[in-house]
Image (cartoon, rainbow, N blue to C red; front, side, top):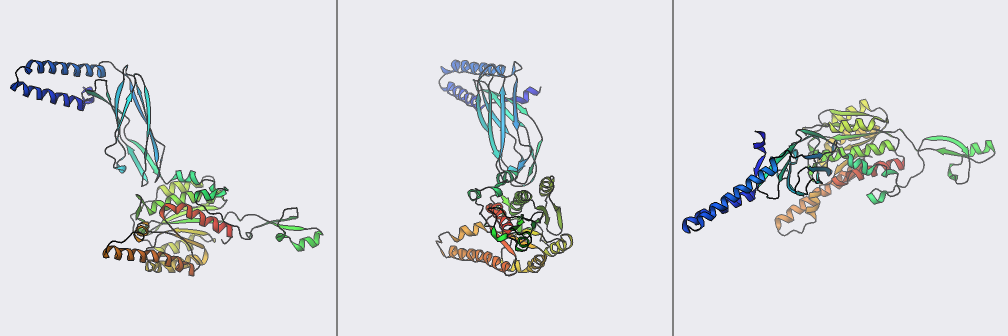
Length: 443
């Protein structure tokens, strides 16, 4: 008797039945309506039976499919496609209810469609996850009605379909190869003027028209009795590590996404740019201890290793141990490297507690500290104050915003580079800083 669980009465059925009950009440006052009301009742029941037979009597074929990507991109709009095929010989009305993963907390997803006899249809909707992990889709439920619209038959398709949500690979595709394009400014990336040469010498060769005369090697020219120039190549295979703070300071959310996930998405995109630039990309995350380590290499499988490691970054947002970070870098990263540290400092005092460790790292490596503007405070500082309390709030907000700039100056005093950015601009600003360092040859 499974078919009993597939029967649903539409709202129209209840409205008509309620109207018939009203007619019966009126029949007690006006007896002339009594027989007409019973006739109406029989007609109504007859139409309900006919509607039921149309939907259930013959074994009509009906199918629906949910097309989901193999993995979802965290923080991005991911397309979900629903395809429907009707085998009924008459036009049908459909109500589609998809059981969306619980993380989205969408409890009222309903789509109304109409299909001709034997027709097909497809529609698309989008989901934006804001945390990594496993997302389980439930059943795809389709309620089919005949033209009478009195009874619906429920069809259910699929169950327990799991889709993993990875760091933002959609951003990865978006920024792929943009570091080598002449149209970087269209995406907010700066054009960096190369200053001088990198230190990696390639060979001495004969001068040809168009060579930079500043590279003439006068000793070789005297020996060969013809102009000779030094040829340089871009310095490659430099180590670049992304260090991700997964402590409590990275728990703050912006647009539903935590600072930690912004940093993870940026690390994925930046790693791709680094590898395209022929450097070695590596990463690790830290809080109370160092985890999710990927050594800096330049292999074909490196991006997949970084992606899987970023996917598995888990945290309870404890207080981060920068002393452990300093000791681990000193022990395990012996070659001078570029270390891009994703963290957050809200106050100058918060920085000064960790500054001795940052200075220690900067002695042996080129350190870039990436931290975040508080966009909500920025909005508050530009808001027109209407009373004393709002003026007080605005002054406090300006104080915190000013402290962010003081943090930048404090880091600069000790030769530590910094990037102060809005969360949504993190990826662009990180790529900019890496390209600037490469262009200036300061690593």
